[in-house]
Image (cartoon, rainbow, N blue to C red; front, side, top):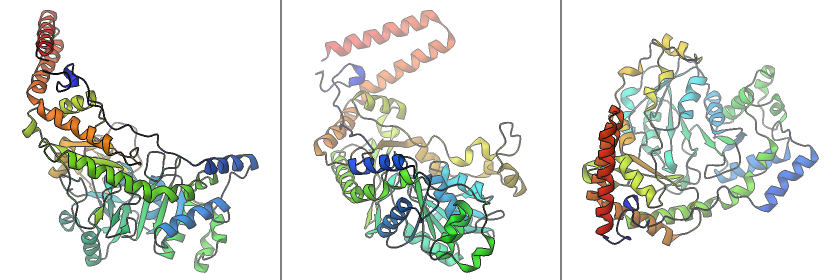
Length: 461
């Protein structure tokens, strides 16, 4: 077998992937602005009375169609601010997804509310609107939706359910800046939204986030709970709130140094999103004949932002395990991984019965509510976790059709060599089994077999 067609994992030449550019990137003007702030000593900003905070929130509000924008120090802080602004708290239930990063659940726990997990679409991993209504009770106050991997959730269906049951909607847009539904950016379909802007996100700074809301009272309630009381001096602060202003707050405010980066980063966002979308389109086209993976299909009018590109591995088509498939891809030069390790409702720190670890404050509330996540069955979330393959897409913010085609060829190359890959997997399993038993002679025999396979592979090139 020729070296170019032999899997790199078995000694062949790697196809090579797209070359990722460094991310995030900053204009020199914005870097100089941070240096100027440091030199001036103006490193504290208590709200929009600070020039950098004001510019950041004004730019974010403009990008999101005039909604109130509040910069905070993380995506988690943004979601926490959204829930506090909506006055979600003890005794309330919030319906959300089990398939995501934990911040979209921990923010619910941190306000004393109870997360209620419903199932997801098995291919996109997004919250399935058809599963939501069965989970609504008299205690349900909100639905917290995650636009995971930059994929917009079905917000029109979720809005209909929320209106029917008089529920609040919160969007977690931390991985989906610039993603759109019918031309409208995500974060615009809810009572409040939270975004992360740490250095690994599509709208990247250092460590930051922002909350959005169309409601005056939600913005100022969130400000009273998570910002400095200096915010009460800003135009628009409600007179009826003033008797309650004090310093009993979470400190979620943002440094002016980081806030100063927002306007410049926003200016390039749509161009970068468009390039990521074009790259994803070329990559998907290259996988047209690759049957061992399944990519999501999106509704008409839905354009993901592509923080990551997700797909499902199909072991029944491949005849090998996902970890073997990922090893083969990496050897070819393609970075691929599984992002979510397990469904959130299975995590130990949500189980108050028999818990022996460091005690999180939310366990008492879960116990009072009689919450037992062990009774929750969410088969689609488990399927997605078992089959998911993700690729980081942040760094592909410039058009790179040739690189995308190379990555797609790596997938096809693995598909064309499944018999050899299956043999490699069996040999690795045999080695592992013998090592586990501590049988040195068996281990030596397995190594001999592996060496024999390698010699046969070389002769067939």
